[in-house]
Length: 94
Image (tube, one colour):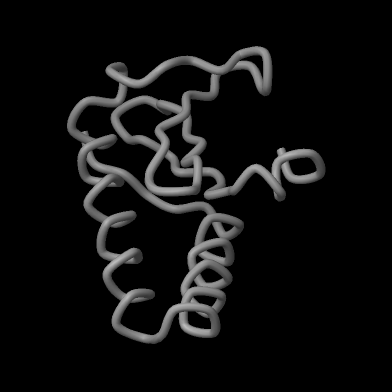
Protein backbone atom coordinates (compact mmCIF):
# COMPACT_ATOMS: atom_id res chain seq x y z
CA UNK A 1 0.00 0.00 0.00
CA UNK A 2 2.83 2.42 0.77
CA UNK A 3 2.93 5.29 3.24
CA UNK A 4 3.56 8.98 3.48
CA UNK A 5 4.44 11.20 6.43
CA UNK A 6 2.48 14.25 7.52
CA UNK A 7 4.46 17.42 8.21
CA UNK A 8 3.88 16.81 11.93
CA UNK A 9 5.27 13.27 11.64
CA UNK A 10 8.36 14.61 9.85
CA UNK A 11 8.87 17.08 12.69
CA UNK A 12 8.36 14.28 15.22
CA UNK A 13 11.07 12.19 13.51
CA UNK A 14 13.52 15.08 13.64
CA UNK A 15 12.71 15.70 17.31
CA UNK A 16 13.11 12.01 18.17
CA UNK A 17 16.41 11.78 16.28
CA UNK A 18 18.00 14.85 17.86
CA UNK A 19 16.78 13.86 21.32
CA UNK A 20 18.40 10.45 20.73
CA UNK A 21 21.66 12.05 19.63
CA UNK A 22 21.72 14.18 22.78
CA UNK A 23 20.91 11.31 25.15
CA UNK A 24 22.42 8.21 23.49
CA UNK A 25 24.75 9.31 20.71
CA UNK A 26 24.51 9.41 16.95
CA UNK A 27 24.84 5.65 16.38
CA UNK A 28 21.96 4.72 18.70
CA UNK A 29 19.81 7.59 17.38
CA UNK A 30 20.38 6.40 13.80
CA UNK A 31 19.57 2.80 14.74
CA UNK A 32 16.30 3.89 16.35
CA UNK A 33 15.43 6.06 13.35
CA UNK A 34 16.05 3.04 11.09
CA UNK A 35 13.73 0.93 13.28
CA UNK A 36 10.98 3.54 12.97
CA UNK A 37 11.38 3.67 9.19
CA UNK A 38 11.24 -0.15 8.97
CA UNK A 39 8.03 -0.03 11.01
CA UNK A 40 6.55 2.51 8.57
CA UNK A 41 7.12 -0.06 5.82
CA UNK A 42 5.46 -2.78 7.90
CA UNK A 43 2.48 -0.49 8.49
CA UNK A 44 2.27 0.26 4.78
CA UNK A 45 2.30 -3.47 4.00
CA UNK A 46 -0.22 -4.51 6.70
CA UNK A 47 -2.04 -1.39 7.85
CA UNK A 48 -5.04 -3.24 9.26
CA UNK A 49 -2.89 -5.57 11.37
CA UNK A 50 -2.43 -2.89 14.03
CA UNK A 51 -5.18 -1.87 16.46
CA UNK A 52 -7.63 0.93 15.88
CA UNK A 53 -7.55 3.70 18.48
CA UNK A 54 -10.87 5.40 17.80
CA UNK A 55 -11.00 6.35 21.49
CA UNK A 56 -8.03 8.65 20.80
CA UNK A 57 -9.06 9.87 17.35
CA UNK A 58 -11.64 8.40 14.97
CA UNK A 59 -10.09 6.50 12.07
CA UNK A 60 -6.62 6.28 13.61
CA UNK A 61 -4.56 3.15 14.26
CA UNK A 62 -1.44 2.76 16.38
CA UNK A 63 1.74 0.76 16.14
CA UNK A 64 4.22 0.85 19.00
CA UNK A 65 7.90 0.95 18.10
CA UNK A 66 10.39 1.17 20.94
CA UNK A 67 9.17 3.87 23.32
CA UNK A 68 7.07 5.69 20.72
CA UNK A 69 3.64 5.14 19.21
CA UNK A 70 3.07 5.67 15.52
CA UNK A 71 -0.40 7.04 14.82
CA UNK A 72 -1.70 6.63 11.29
CA UNK A 73 -4.80 6.39 9.17
CA UNK A 74 -5.59 4.53 5.99
CA UNK A 75 -6.59 6.95 3.26
CA UNK A 76 -7.56 5.22 0.03
CA UNK A 77 -4.52 3.47 -1.34
CA UNK A 78 -1.99 4.97 1.08
CA UNK A 79 -1.25 5.04 4.76
CA UNK A 80 -0.76 8.47 6.26
CA UNK A 81 1.61 8.49 9.22
CA UNK A 82 0.16 11.35 11.24
CA UNK A 83 2.30 11.52 14.42
CA UNK A 84 5.09 9.64 16.24
CA UNK A 85 4.66 10.27 19.95
CA UNK A 86 5.84 9.02 23.30
CA UNK A 87 3.56 8.88 26.33
CA UNK A 88 4.79 12.29 27.45
CA UNK A 89 3.69 13.84 24.14
CA UNK A 90 0.23 12.32 23.80
CA UNK A 91 -1.95 14.59 25.92
CA UNK A 92 -1.54 17.72 23.81
CA UNK A 93 -0.65 16.37 20.39
CA UNK A 94 -3.50 14.43 18.77
